[in-house]
Length: 102
Image 1: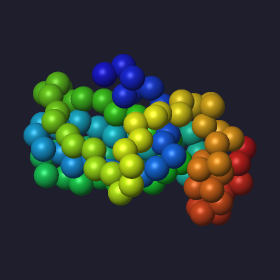
Image 2: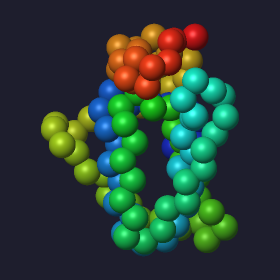
Image 3: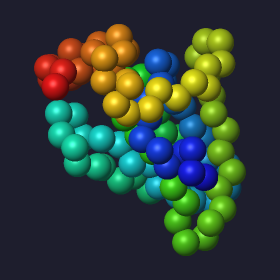
């Protein structure tokens, strides 16, 4: 679980379907260092745009079964913070959200 809790982004969308269990996805608020916590439970579908810093942790049930879905060739490569700050997908994400890179 430690690798999922480390703050990171992906160059592509992260699409997750929760099959069983529950947990939390934390997403960075745009232009801020504040977290937005999203609880996910069975049958939830979560789409995290490419370039969005996020992390995942279990809840007290300590169990989740999720599928990651892809729209193109599968890519699992995380880009950890701060390395992602200057990645082209992060800069595009910030531009799309009308936020200048810090």
